[in-house]
View 1 (cartoon, rainbow, N blue to C red):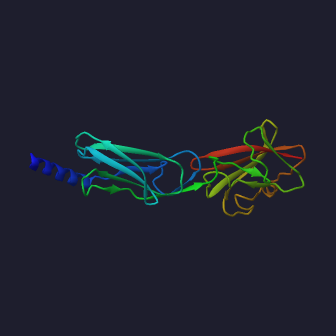
View 2: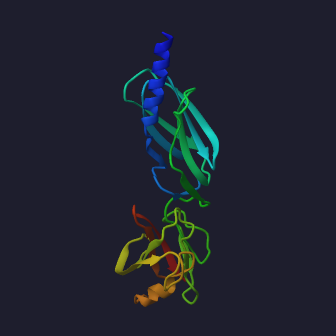
View 3: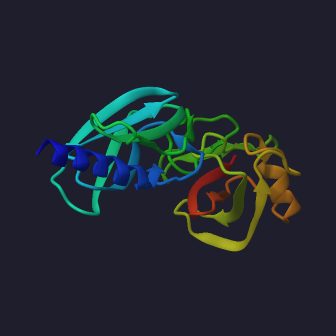
Length: 238
């Protein structure tokens, strides 16, 4: 009986050494990424197992263990064990370790995925005009003067993207659209109208044959691609 146990342990160590972790992702990402602040970070992973009764999963952040789970499994050939960790959003380097408890040589680890956390709690595109308070609903309107600047800041969008889409179109207070829509894609860091944090919306409109008149409303749209996300708000010229 003792010899049988020794053989079984050796078999488990050998087969576990051949196992591979797969399906590893952090918030669905398999490479470094930037996420928004707010909501748990979800880490997923799975692996085949060969009869280990106790599988220990550990999540590491910046090299330190932050969560550990032990799964008690019944003997099965080519079974699969899954793990999901949900943790508070924190920037850093995440990786997962899996081992059979008390069996040497059975430790497997994932690659590291580096997560940058954007301090903005807003998920998706968002913008302010002339440093005014953020318009949180479609009923909120930015009031600007015809003679003054109209500067758009979409840097609070989360996550930030390397390019962003801008459009502007004559509207009424109910967001109904009229006439020509000026639009274009721009580099977030630098473009002919400024960066994403200081975009000269007035110059962009004028270069596209818009003349601002007091009393008129304009629809302003900011969007990102892959996947497509957009937000539209009104400005009123006073």
